[in-house]
Amino acid sequence: MDLLILPFDHRSSFAKKILGVEGNPNKAQIEQIKKLKRLVFDAFLKVRSEVEKPEELGILVDEKYGAEIIKEANQKEIITSVGVEKSGVDVFDFEYGRKFGKHIEKLNPSYVKVLVRYNPENAKENVKQLKRLEKLSKYCEKKGRKLLFELLVPSTDADLAAGKDYDTEIRPEKTAIAIREIREKVAVSLWKLEGFSTEGWRKVLEVIPEDKKVIVLGRGEDAERVRYWLTVAAEFDQIIGFAIGRTIFMEPLISHLKNSLGKEETIKAIAVNYRNFVEIWREGRA
Image (tube, rainbow, N blue to C red; front, side, top):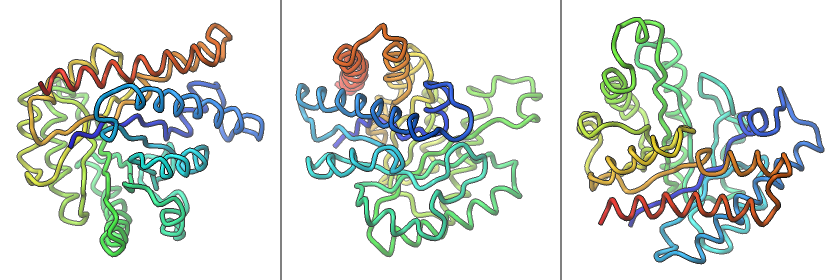
């Protein structure tokens, strides 16, 4: 089964890039963020009610602003994912510290998701991250939970000084190395990775066992870039879908806040964007 996720678990970036809030939002701003995330979820429900194979559609949302959405989605038997990482940090740490397990059990998501920034050159930081990730992995194995691992491989200064295009010439190999290192400590159920060319995917998929699947993330890129990534990824049976968020909801929500889009228009605009990517993926598969 394919898996086509609409992620809106963004926290610090959501507040900053949509509301223009630096630092922690106040009570009124928190309520505003919750309402905006509700619009995204309503758009998801609209698409889910219209497309074939609605069981392939899922959401990724955070506990801080979306606990009620997660509860409702679980009741509707929607595939849910919830992140455990602190937002906006370069080195992975748990959002709720030692209590991360209690929060997972309370929310009961289909997938436990973790976002990690991991360049193999950052050895010192990676040792710290792997120790924490191993703890998460053992917890998921013990509880029978699926772990969705979102891997970002940011460039280092040395990468940028190498005189090569980072995304096409360096990142695929670095991603493969990162996956090898992470696999030694972490039992990943599903990888969520940045897009690549056909050649780049071949390098990356070589280090992922065939029984482990992959979905493509959107990275907030423009629609044409994401379309390219999906078209290429659809060629590979091991890649089963996507998790695209900001490319889908960012512009409609900003327009809504500027009063140029009403509530229903905003929901419709987000739904159109999401459905377009669902159709692009399924056409690529066909």
